[in-house]
Length: 69
Image (cartoon, rainbow, N blue to C red; front, side, top):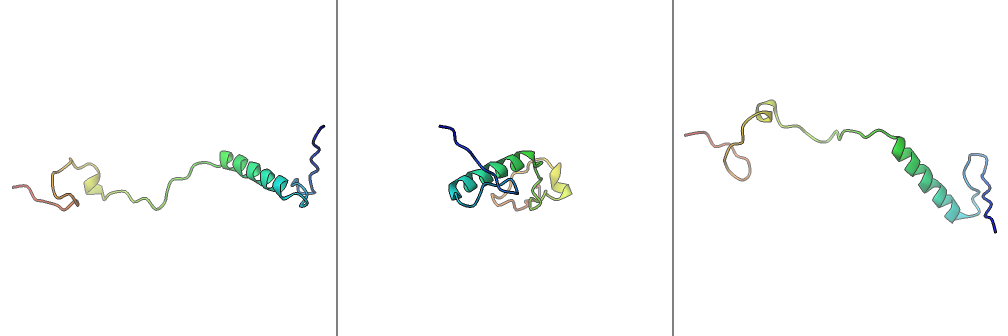
């Protein structure tokens, strides 16, 4: 027995079968996700310029600055 899938005018399955609709939209979302380019996180902050190339200093475990002796 062959399963026949009838698509509505927008290419989506008819609203009569919610499981078929869910599977259709899950597949559609997965395809769109694959096509989308990865985005750089905007909420990630870089350290200030003086600290970007600074050598690792021993100090307090919370990152407090301890001047050299």
